[in-house]
Image (tube, rainbow, N blue to C red; front, side, top):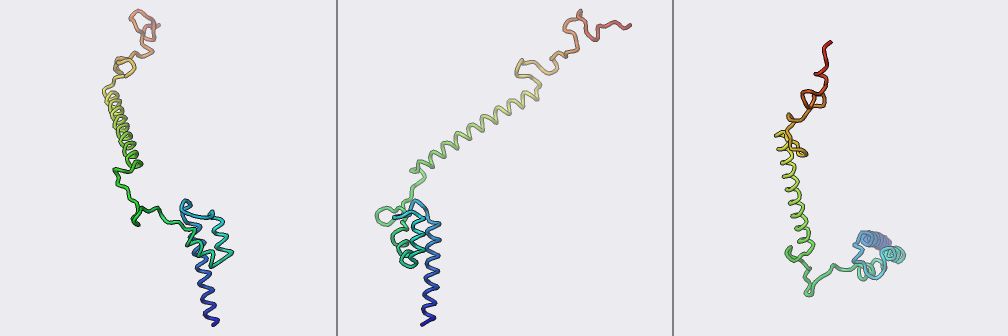
Length: 144
């Protein structure tokens, strides 16, 4: 008889621990009746009955359609999925435009033109050379 009571006690402890763990990790939106913390208190202070109440009352089922079928949505009918596809397409277009702009900038740099004034690098004037032949500059100084 002692072995039977010991076995039932161990089973009750294991059942209570399982119920507490299930309650602690269960989806908050599907818990019915009490809040999660109160369910844990009930399970711990009324061990077997509290755990049974948790599995019968507190543990809500997933939303189901009439007839017992789980609700599935086709991708064409899922608004979140379609919205995500639209944003991905917009991002792809933006990336393509930016890549084209970068390619244009790279081709301009390779050809040596400056976007700001349209002149080539070789056409730019150096600051130490005079702009007109009669002006004074480092090359126009007398030798002597």
